[in-house]
Image (cartoon, rainbow, N blue to C red; front, side, top):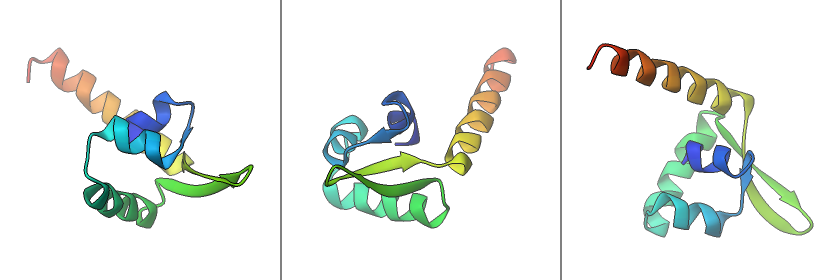
Length: 77
């Protein structure tokens, strides 16, 4: 879900996130609540539309995750 938000420029409409994440609405809501609780995403409003926006904490997590993935792939793990 964080990657989907990042791919859309850092913020995404809830419907678009639902399609990109390929989850049920109920499951997506659970994950969103957890990500908000960990300050990785925030809800914002622009022109009367609600968006989910990646926070600095979410960006740091994605960067560290990419580094771990590159490291494991370099060693064939």
